[in-house]
Length: 180
Image 1 (tube, one colour):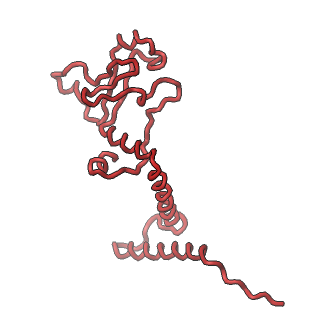
Image 2 (cartoon, helix red, strand yellow):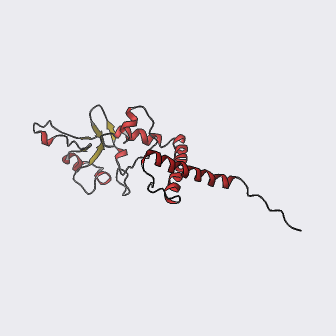
Image 3 (cartoon, one colour):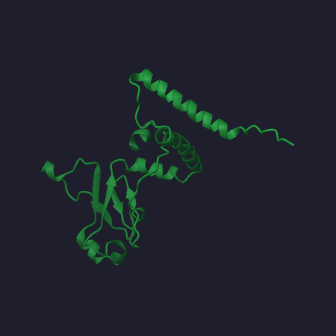
């Protein structure tokens, strides 16, 4: 979903669902450096994590076509590494997965650190709250009138009701004259 807007030079103000962070103190994917020229990750110790160590003649052994590439370090290198307890304490080697549109995901992560992103998230919440009000309070979970004209009429009435609610909150109620 993030690849499409980034390809068209649209800044994606979309939160990235990222489960690459670790809570057990071991190195996460962010600690590894991505080398796009050689299509590999470099671990903090300087070792290479590659997707393929040789070219396969059997097409079933190559890329999976699922949109996710798996990079792994050699078992012998990882076993002899002094940082193995911080890298892969429970495995023989370290492996990292990379999404097909990981570059677009990184663009979205970088945008998420900006002040404009915070503003857009506040505005997004305002809009989504209006749709939630339409669905839950005003009963537009499903439309009752048929066709595009019926849907247009229902949404026009619902938007009018929303605007009247806002107007009622903005304008003060008329004060009754007190009897003496």
